Image (cartoon, rainbow, N blue to C red; front, side):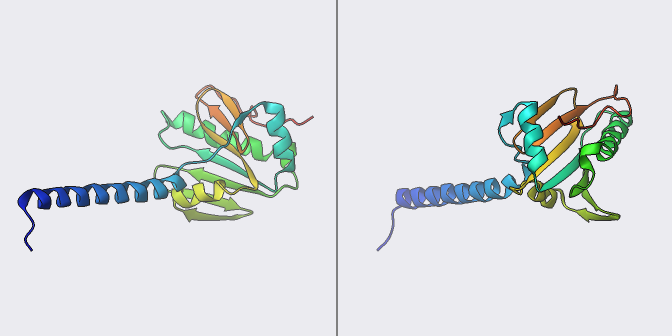
Length: 164
């Protein structure tokens, strides 16, 4: 039995559409690991309570696409300032620095190089809270993170948590 030209065209078209859909689903699924799941927006007091009870804390310094070396330095300094603030004493804290190519994870005195995707997967674990520092001028609180904006006007010691 021979298939007519119109039927062949329809079959090829449908196969093409199926391939595009499958590739789209593949990239959507794999791309989700690249997205930091910060949770629902909440107020500062609720975030501080979640922070207080979290099993794991991450201090993330994201210097990707910053506008200047000054902003980059300020983001890194903010991470240091958070780490030295009182609420971190005795906590299980992991430090991450994300640049254009890689992610560096600091645990105790050891630093490991990871892919950005793997770092985002770590941050998306359910039992953790992150202080996610990036270029900006505002701080917004979510159920899994405080997104802290730092710019060229940062002063040493401005980043820190003060709990009630």
